[in-house]
Image 1 (cartoon, rainbow, N blue to C red):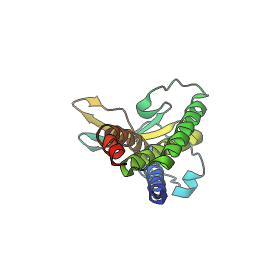
Image 2 (cartoon, one colour):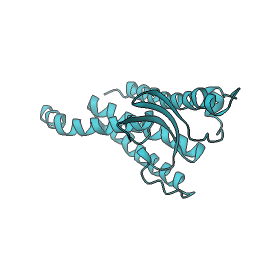
Image 3 (tube, rainbow, N blue to C red):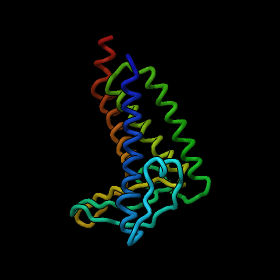
Length: 183
């Protein structure tokens, strides 16, 4: 099976994650933080530098959805955020090693669903790795809440990881046995 379309999907998801983080920080959050005239960076300038961390901010978009500025020093949804200076390096190294394992798995995969799921996890992990290496933390900005309860803030990369893992589970439980018998 040709892997080029999956490589394109991975690049698109990685870029979408980074562009969304740039847009939220530079176009939405800075307008609230830096009044009256924010000094926004263009995408490539932002991507190649490590601008100072913005303070926590919340912008209400809908009654159940806010755009927030959260610096996550742990993994998805803030888990394992102990504040150690080695934390970002450890988590980045672990994410890269897992991504390499998933990349090898992708190379051996003959299932479209499994390949899409693996690419989603890899792209999400690498999107968060780039944040950790640049800022020492991951930019989280999506805040979903209902009846006073907030889901932990997350980003596009976290969504890719969660959806990718969910698809791997679905593929494993519902499609893997059919694929084995078809061989």
